[in-house]
Amino acid sequence: MIDQRTTHRCMLAEIASGEDIQSGRPTQTLQTLLLVGFVTRQPSRDRTFAHLALTEAGHRYLAGLWH
Image 1 (cartoon, rainbow, N blue to C red):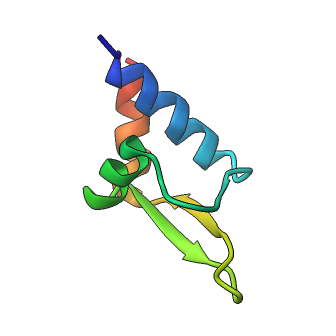
Image 2 (image 1 turned 90 degrees about the vertical axis):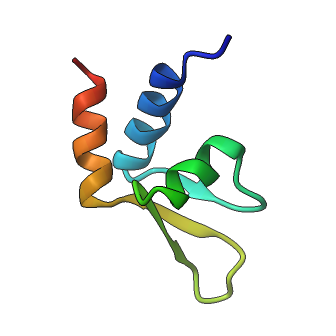
């Protein structure tokens, strides 16, 4: 069984670091985080990749995952 708490914490921490760039189809976990509003995508001008960023709700969720 996958520990979603750890998976979400790792993914959100990576996005929060500002180094995560996504191209291609998002994973199921990333799709879920996008749909619930914890992560937002900011496409590049040519739309070949997207910068990911945490929303305010995403920052609160990430903070709660450390406890």
